[in-house]
Length: 268
Image 1 (cartoon, rainbow, N blue to C red):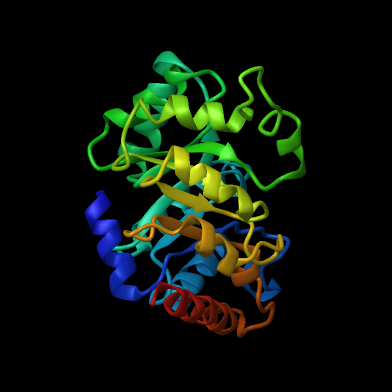
Image 2: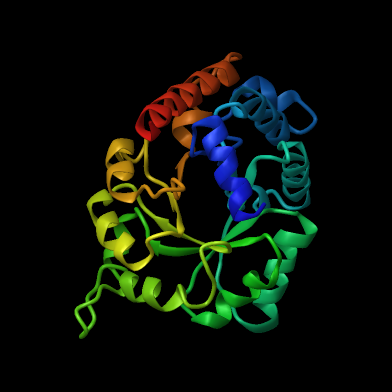
């Protein structure tokens, strides 16, 4: 999916919601465990219930690859089931160089046909640029994450006075453009979005941390929105585990609809 197609979907649906498919066999309703493919059955019902309210889905690859071959099969079926006009993110956080990075890109873009993949930039341009060689595909680069450990490196200051994450932004933005690179910026530090927008005023931001992690949607929009919206705000647990009974999908749909309505009001 290219930049303009993504923007069109956001404005059409009045939503910039991304639903994280962090599908955990220990958390899904127990009755689904009796189905042939519990992970896919759960995802299928979540997608059916939320597809009218979101513009992106983000399977967290760890939840699938831990299940071995069957997990990868569930992932493929999930990707095939997602409507083609909805943006897909492989939340894989890969971060290697050379042919390894190239083959990771081929895995998620060619084999599984994701629109994007999350990438760790710690090893420099070699770990990101192979993803940028694929037409209408995106690298989503980790910048300022919402976890406590972000303090260990991302929020350390360099001699220049920059935070490490700011150096990542200012350097990596030269590798691609707003049409093939996004950045992960956590919702738990929304006040820093204003400074981030000074460095990357027009790139899309994938923003986790709204909902279960306590981030504020209105604050994210206040500091991070662009003329083209420029945001994909992710909610995983807050939506997919909104209910744990046989009506789990209905509850997920209600939660997604509620977030979409708030987004629509913030966009107007």
